[in-house]
Figure: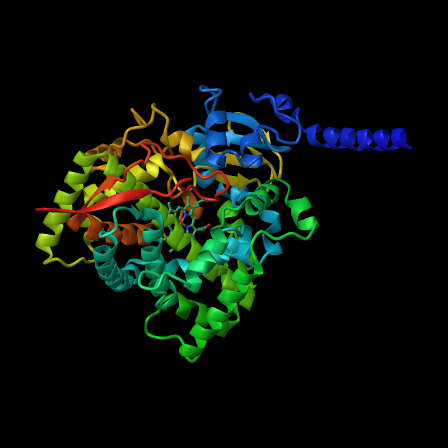
Amino acid sequence: MILTIIFILSLCVYILYRISTRKFDYWQKKNVNYVQPTPFLGNYSGYILLKENLLDVVYNLSKLFPNDPYVGAFFGTKPTLIVKDPEFIKLVLTKDFFYFTGKECFEYTHKEVITQGIIFTYGDRWKVIRQNVTPLFSSSKMRSMFRIIEHCSGVFENLLDEESLAPEVEMKSLMSRFTMDCIGGCVFGVDINAMQEPKDNIFTTMGCLFLETTTSRGIKNVVKAIWPEIFYGLGFKVFPTDIHKFFSKLLVRIFEARDYKPSERTDFVDLLLNLKKNRHIVGDRLQKIKTGDEGADSKLELEVNDDLLVAQCVSFFIAGFETSSNSLTFTLYELAKNPDVQKRAQKEVDEYIKKHNNKLDYDCVKELPFVEACIDEALRLYPLFGVISRQTGERYTFPTGLTLDKGDRVHIPVYHLHHDPEYFPEPELFKPERFYGEEKKNIRPFTYLPFGAGPRVCIGERFAKMQMLAGLVPILKRYTVRLAEGMPETINFEPKAIASQPNIGVRLNLLPRNN
Ligand code: HEM
């Protein structure tokens, strides 16, 4: 009996082993340099075992064949090409975008309501949604949203009066409260009030639920990313249904408050109301990008239902507050470590404030180039998405003759590019001058990708810049930031987080300026 059990178990292990390694000659057959993989874990063991953030793993793999345009790897059991050469990255993200419209496991995005949003979805559906929400980010819309951001910046300034009394301040949660209020006002037209009432704030709770870094969420993220067929086949979901329920109710409440009629604000809610009224949205199919075909079926009509609306809401809520608050935190951390740079940024803010009678306006984005360069440099050192992922929707051949099969993964090693001394000399130093004035022109295209590039580039880049400057000005004009006692000089990334975030609280002192 015991012998039979041992035999069956051994057989199972052997079968699993054979299944997990059956593609491990993939890159060898294609003549691509690759790293010897481990059964089940491939080359991503640190990420799969929740010990390292994805960007750290891909960074280390990217360094291995310095002269090759790409490296073959195995994301668990899945063949994955790490594309390092900027010319090849350009092909993937822009020129031959048609083949790479989907992100990792795109074919499963219909399995959860939230993954039907613009961030996760793919193909024609993504194209139609993107086309329909793009007008929301026009210059005139940005200008009108700035009034809300300016208001939040004022509330933030008052909040700083209280926070600065504490011996030290945890920056990440403080900045999240600011960006959450901005996004609530600009996108949903509601007062989230996270700055004044952080405790038991339902939006804060939803944000935490979405971004939680528990072990069980970490495991779910990993299994879903690598083996979506097993993950969804077993009926799992990544995001708790509470998130979806909350945003469904929120939308009804907002729609009722507006009597189901678009207002004069022409904000995101109005856009959703119009979509709801028309019951469908129309846009160009991706085929048009490939063939330029203007024929009748180059258009696609997408049915608008509640799930589609909720998915877009969640996309904008999450993309809008968490990314900017983390970037602000990293920027302040570097300013605290580099007092000379901080002084120069403060000087620019002082001049701006004097010129504009202590008032922040929309043009601050143009008039604070050095502060903006500090943000750009922080985004270089700490890109929020240190790996941009894609999956081929069709067979694709690179100019070198290498053919990727349908469904192959592509990882673009953003963190590696940003830390490559060939593109950014002395890469570990915080030098905002790289992004200031004429110097900026020396940056080689497709080596600096904090917002991505091409048709799927971050839609909220300008909004993010506006929001981040409005968060930095009140701090720099009245305070000097310093590392709190015991705060380390380097920060590691949280292994279980989807986007880069510090694995510890970023504690700074806010010292009132005496000039
Ligand atoms: C510092 C702040 C931000 C950073 C670093 C950032 C970065 C990015 C990156 C790297 C992507 C993916 C590009 C790709 O896969 O090729 C992205 C996509 C996106 N971002 Fe941002 N983002 C920021 C702020 C925002 C804000 C404030 C919003 C909205 C208000 C926003 C909305 C989006 C959306 C909707 C997408 C998906 C676009 C698509 O797939 O078509 N982001 N962002």
